[in-house]
Image (cartoon, rainbow, N blue to C red; front, side, top):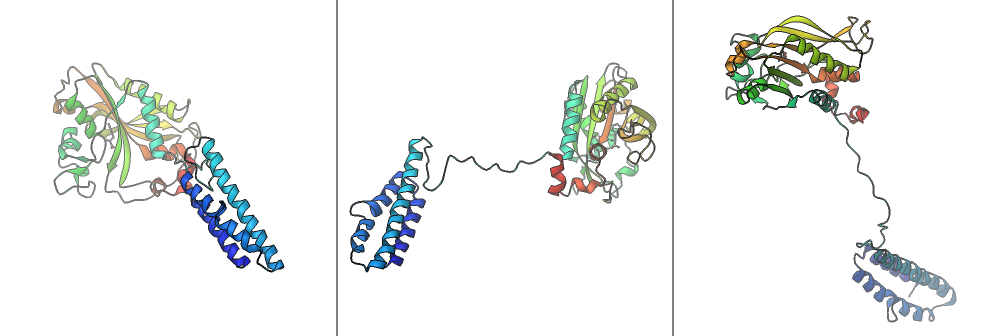
Length: 338
Ligand code: PHE
């Protein structure tokens, strides 16, 4: 027997003790090496037969084996006694665990959650519709005739079934009104699709939040009040709104709604392109023809609707220069929103 053999035995003993996964395993290791008839006591007897210098080094390794093995066995049993239940030899179960990295909220989700929270406070509830829509709900019921350019295959993704990927969240207005009697007060966040070539401000896939309020005497002033409240809650207390005349087939009158620039307070800066205003939403009073399509009596009810681009709001609010950053999933960018 040489000290190299004892060294080898020591390695095996420590490995077995470390791998022991139950008290029974550990006890087996103890008996194998440390009991009276165990391997270590055999070695101790053989030491006497060795030459003096060999005996010294072999004896030292044998003592190390005994000591280190005892420590491992002992620490396993104190852990069991201290109640950790699943004590595993060689592992300190009392150490705090490692936290898995926490994800962060995507800026698009942040804007949607914020708008849902703000408008929820004044009674709007969330309604959702499918991404695949019928031509009827995306266009016809919204008073958009077949010859309207937005139906063109260069603008809309048509499916072989004759259905399409919705180009706006407005068809959810139709779905809700088909199924509920007035009053209706909903917002509908969701994905939309248009055949736009991607660049810094366009994406073929984007998000809108639609709002619809129908009741017995809703006016344009209510629309302006709601959007002013939203502007201030979302962008800051000094932000105002203005309406510019516009056209949408499903609202009459129609407007485009601008928020005053939250960065320069309307004085003019790079964000608002020196105009002091930022275009945020399309809106207007629901056209009576739309009410007729869903079976509402347009002499009894009136309503407003608005639709805004979520990416646009996120870019303005968080100073994001390129819409593509919202889709690239670059963790360095996403972590800025922790
Ligand atoms: N759906 C319109 C768009 O995508 C926005 C809009 C919604 C306009 C509701 C008026 C009323 O441009």
